[in-house]
Amino acid sequence: MFRRPSGSLRAKLTLLYVGLLAILLLALGSFLYLETERFLETTTVVRLRAQAKPVVDGWLAMMETATLNREPSLDLASTATELSRALTSRETTAVVYDATGAELADGRRLPEEPLPAPADPAAISRALAGDNEVTYTVEVAGQRTLVALVPLRPEPDQDVVVGVVQLSTPLDLVDAILWRQRAMIGLGTLVTLVAGIVGGLWLTTSTLNPLGRMIGTCRRIAAGDLGQRVNLPHRTDEIGELAAAFDDMASQIETTFAGQRRFIADAAHELRTPVTALSGSLEVLLRGAQDNPDAANSLTQGMHRDLERLRRMLEQLLDLSALDAAATVDTATIELGAFVTSFTGLARTLAHERELRIEPGPAVTLLADPDRLERALANLVDNAAQHTAAGGAIRLGWQTGPGTVDIWVADDGEGISPADVPHLFDPFYRGDRSRSRRRGGTGLG
Image (cartoon, rainbow, N blue to C red; front, side, top):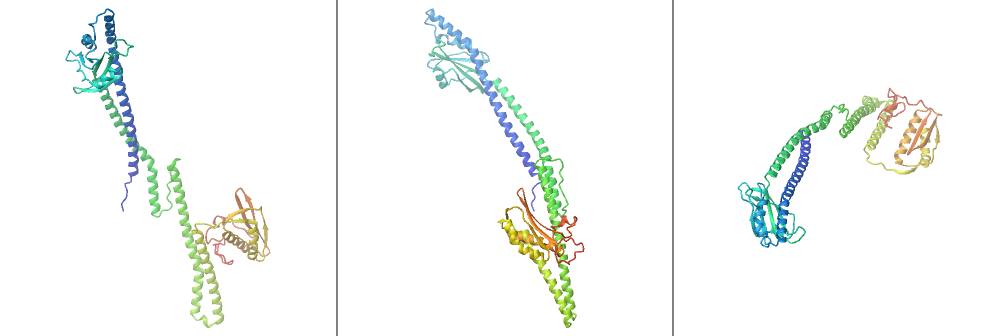
């Protein structure tokens, strides 16, 4: 028969734990990486614009001075080269465009200065329309480059845009920082997952060890050792509760099997007596006792009594089996006073020469199976009559408690020995140690 690996649940729980940990780490790492990238690019844009502002302000001041001095020849076209070179450095290249989007000047002069980004007509059009926050990234000679567009206005508070300055700077430093962060996030994730696997295996192993202990106990019980228990100490969690419930179940199973074995032994013992008597009587008859009418009549009457006892015992066994197998009880609403009144006639018949006293309690209505309740009371009254001398008294009554009704049958006989009380509901048990049948009981009532 195929058997699943003993560690499958441990492996599944560990994989689930590590998988969830990996997803959380991936989500957190991605969030931190994207936020860092956004922050570094925003910081670079702010730096570019901050570096360009004094230069652009100086150009505006120069243009304003030229206007005041009535120098019409000084315009953007004539100052574009000077402006672009003033904005260009080893980290930034500036390109100036006029109001039509045509390139006027490229500030790059030295080889170590970065290459300018190619013109983006759509972005330039947005800047010419007055958008002060046009920023994007492009690939220039295999390098990721950040581009920021600065609109040029004759006056800071005017809506007229006479040109655009394109500032582009490579993101080498930013990419190096981001690569280092990716490496750190990847290494940290790897180390955390390894630690998570080790910790998850330890956690699941320590958690599931009691379950392995329970499995071993189950197998030993299945092999026939009903006395095995998990006995899991110092656990108050769900596994501890499961182990305690399992031990309780095992105890009940052991008690049930012990009771079943005892029941079978007692039933065999009780049935063997009338069967042995019948066998003996038949053997005597077969040896010739039938020729003696008196002896044959005596043997026949004894055989009849044994058969009647055997029949009653079998009927009680069948009734007991039916009670144990019954899945439902046919309950009905019973007014207890009226029920006891109707039961009194049967009770007096069972009491014979004993006085029957009814001690009614408060009026009460209960849900019960009338037939089973009557049989239970009849058995109690019959048992009381067997243990009460002629002329004695048998009392039947009831009282109510919080949500309960207590019905009792009492007599003034010899009573029940304290040693017999724990066995009152054991089948075939009788207080007579010699198992005498003077009263004719079977112990199944």
